[in-house]
Image (cartoon, rainbow, N blue to C red; front, side, top):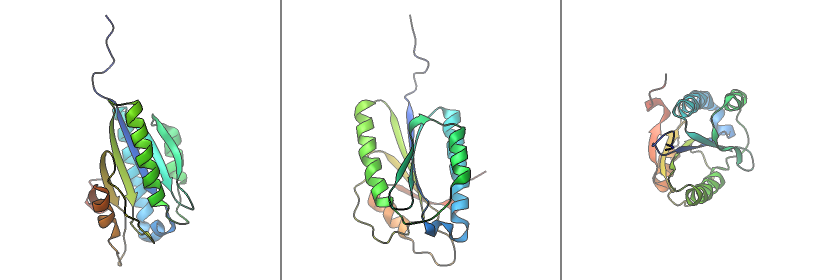
Length: 169
């Protein structure tokens, strides 16, 4: 009789990274890179699938869509810089569509979403809650904080955490 390798349901971690120009301020992107390195390492150890959506410039760009973590992600993370606009609303809409489609094809998969942003959007349209457990990590730093990431998390039905409140190694 053949047995499955694991009775544990597969997991997918979708990570949306806001790397707009505003994330360069006060080392915010550097802190985010530390967090992301830990997330990628955990995904590798737990054999979770990863999807990474880069939100910078004019439009979001998929870097990874449901593959295992690999050294390519570390290379991308090392080279990650900030610049341009914040296509975060577009990234969130793409992510919601992609997750719903994936749920239809892989109904037993557990999905989790991590959004890393400083919340500095020039225009934040009303967004629907996302179709899976979500965590928004606020990387806004510096003496003047707008606090928009907390409201964005509330609009998305996501748990909110400031990066300084996370236990990083």
